[in-house]
Length: 147
Image (cartoon, rainbow, N blue to C red; front, side):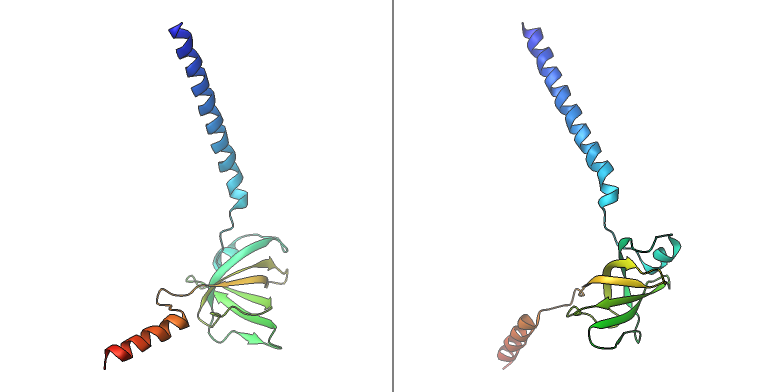
């Protein structure tokens, strides 16, 4: 009787382990198509990506490359540490931290003529970034403690 309990428990544990392994395999095989890592301009030039495929492009805005005609349509060039460059077109309001030399990630599509049509822009602040409200508060605190 004790042997049948052990055997039954062993079957259930084995079945549970097999189901867990199957779930892990499904997750692992589903991830490569769902990862949305950005590519640099150098990587983008080396790949054969068809126009219209959505992707993320990351790099730094080349100083002096930013232009706007009407304040809504923006054009700039992204570069990476390997020297690759990519022209980016964007329509809409720019993020607050957008500036030349800034690192950004643009989500969009290749337009077929060598450009990149961005739909969204993400900017990254550096580690020294302090919100304006906190910076003003810290300056006031230093003024009162220094007197």
